[in-house]
Length: 296
Image (cartoon, rainbow, N blue to C red; front, side, top):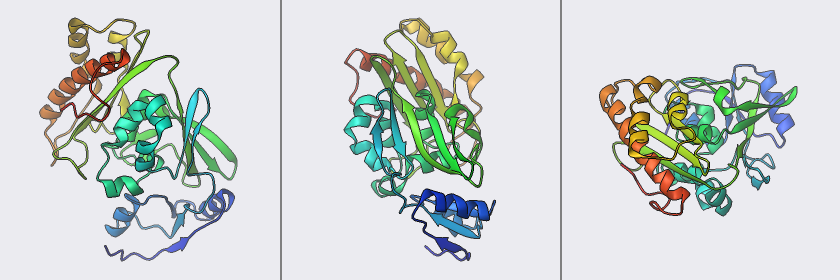
């Protein structure tokens, strides 16, 4: 892989140093963590920064921490580390399942959860799962730290609420109180490095609170508030599933592109929502398919 563009590469030792460099180059610096998206964009000259700031030396960004009612995931934690984490599998099974669908083994070994949502491509696999968990992104800037709810994070294709002078340092993922079941359903042309054609994440709690999110079928990952309203507080039945899937067209706005047509994506969103709801409800009571089982 050849990168023709010229830029200054810096590798700060502290978060304060990294933030200072970004502030000195507003709009002209990019952060490097895993680099699976950034390097490709540099190669294709989709972006031409003056400075690339490598944050891999900074202490504390590679940790997964149990905070009691939440799990904190640092910005250097890779998808492979999420998959291997017993803490994530036990407390955030939806996130573990979504991580297993990302790219190839090589990609998962380098790509980070935080980098995935910072790239903010509509098909990012972390987006729907984090939306279903009501996650919060913590960012650092010269003025200190601030927190951005994941529902306010995605602003459009490759656009987030992160300022150019800020670094996303971790994601805080609340753990649902009490038992919950979940499912991540992903449609793609083949296993491996293909992007999602559509994806659905489902969380259901023991009091029948449902959290539904979609990916790759709008300008950004999104929560399905209308579908959640239909489902809320009711035990899952065939009639309820039919009522929920009937609202899919009101929630998503897929396009036709090289990976799939609009009508096919719409149809499969209904199919995947149906299967995801059934799997999540079954897992809630200790049944259902093993984590990571493909449902399409």
